[in-house]
Image (cartoon, helix red, strand yellow):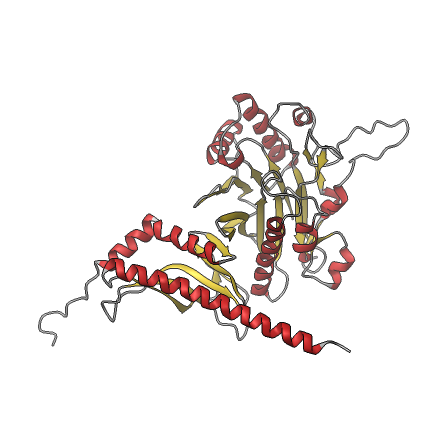
Amino acid sequence: MRISFSWWNTSLSPLGRRRATGEQKAIAFEVIKYLVTQVGVDCLALGEVTVEDVEEMITSTGLNGYEFVDGTLNSGRLQFDTGLLYRKEKLQLVNLTSLVSARGSRSMKVANIIDFFVPNTERLFHVFVSHWPSRIWCKQNSADRHLLGVRLRDAVLELNKLYDGPAHTILLGDFNDEPFDSSLSEQLLAVRDRNLIQKDPTLLYNPFWRHLGEAIPQEPGIPCRSYSGSCFHKSGIETKWRTFDQIIFSSTFLGSSEWHLNEKYTQILQLHPFDTFVIKPNEIFDHFPVISVIEREEANG
Amino acid sequence: MANFTEAFKKGLEAAQTADRARKEIDKVFKDLNYQLLTETGNKIGINRKEFVEPNVMGGMKLPAIPGRENKYWAIVAFNPSFKNSPVKILARWSMDRAGYPCKISWKNTLYRCEDKEALENILAEILQDPLVGETLYSLMKWEKPQPEKGSE
């Protein structure tokens, strides 16, 4: 059995404010349709969407066999703008909780936590969907960004307590931080070193450490047009590309349970011709989807 | 040699900080309780109370963990005019050993309050909720059930 997880920041409705034209929505719906029907994504988390966007998308694409988890909660003064489509055949929704960190008069969205039961197994998967604040509002390496990482890690450790060991946890989203930024690498402890995780199973594995640069290596005489990240910043000085979109796994997917990460499918989906919209000036789209796949070891006989 | 004296001093300092934080949190609830008692003529009190629940999540059993009881704390409202007033849970509550962050779980959202101002803001947000308003109103209007005629 295989379950694929994908995250895409659609750019349609940041902070729940709908801004996309009919043409832009049609482009986004095509991308989602492609992810679901061609790539076969089982669990697709979406950023910068409203319920109306998703309902419109389901109607226009005729999507069958999927349910939508509305994570676009208006939690007091906070607006969550994420949602999640999942294939009913592979996952059963158990619970949805939003996690907010409040300091002084300011509140920050840490994650939506969605618990799934996997039919025909004894497993609960805990999927954390995050869309952390932009660096315009919350500077790189600021105390608030550290706090987001700390609180996300606290939530992961609290889940582990329920199991007396690491839970089956998957964290995905647009963190507006890269794998090497302190919030993710030092506070959340989403590391690159699989051997280290074997020694300390409370660490998390971030396969997107391997996706920080150009997707295709430079080789003489061979076409090597690619992009070096998941998110395009046209005004970037030292780089126009960032790997802000990531999928992170608990150690249970690295050999200590029957579920395994198959890392060869972990990718930034630099879709063509969608890429032309991502790099186009004055276009709303600036993110590629990311994907990861887990597989279950089937018992012999 | 390890500097145990320094570690000991740090421990004492941390204990004092935690004690101050816990007292500050107690004071927030004391103020909240006092203000509602005053406003309602002693008909709404707010407190924190411990409950026990079965070991389930979303209707499914979680792995049994020997020796660990599923106890939880909640922020509750009651009508102090009556000794046997119903106790209504407004939100779940827990607190770090150091006082902050304290956690309030309400309407499918888990708030981690990092300081006094954040705690006060979230409590105020809960009080403004229409469903909480209805609960508090019903408590204010609650009357002790009358014994049936001839039952004495």
